[in-house]
Image 1 (cartoon, rainbow, N blue to C red):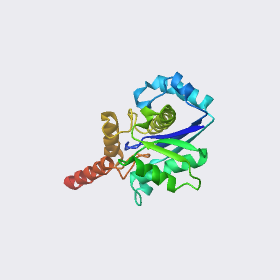
Image 2 (tube, rainbow, N blue to C red; image 1 turned 180 degrees about the vertical axis):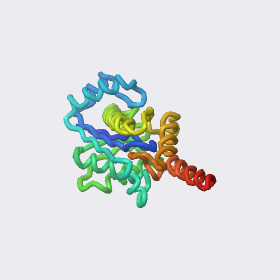
Image 3 (cartoon, rainbow, N blue to C red; image 1 turned 60 degrees about the vertical axis):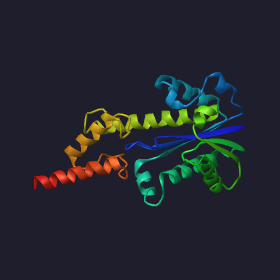
Image 4 (tube, one colour; image 1 turned 90 degrees about the horizontal axis):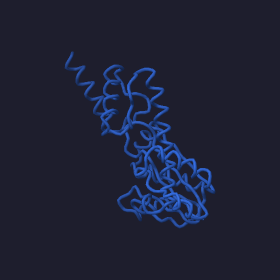
Length: 218
């Protein structure tokens, strides 16, 4: 039995962080289906592979961490520590003997040690950068995390479009569609939309600009 864990949505200003873990007897089927880093697969193929992975996996676990929870945790934790916490929760559920993880820390060994420190049992944790492109089982986890986050963002867009009928984009700060949506929302409603990570610099800058504009108008 081997397990893999990965996340999607570390950097976005909008929407959740999703951590996924998956367990297989071996990775032969994953190799056969050329399962790899979700970022290198088209959305249509990701959706198809996600269904296949859920069907043939021994077990899988998906943790969704909403934007508000991320903001609350960032008052006392770094983003790396939030990820360690999320990976630990998922691995606790899977209870693997061996687990490959995609390191969010520049120090990949420290990331693995920090996860291990939060577990009551002691599996072998293999922590590597770009593990989703090295180990098919981590690639499978990255696909589950990415497709779930995409689903969450689609649901958020449907809800927010009831008040502002504009495309939301990916939720990433560098996405011009997301930047435009947030800017117009703040201009129109005077505050950030629901599901925004208020602790992100992009969000804080928008509010600061709104306050400055009000002072200038005054």
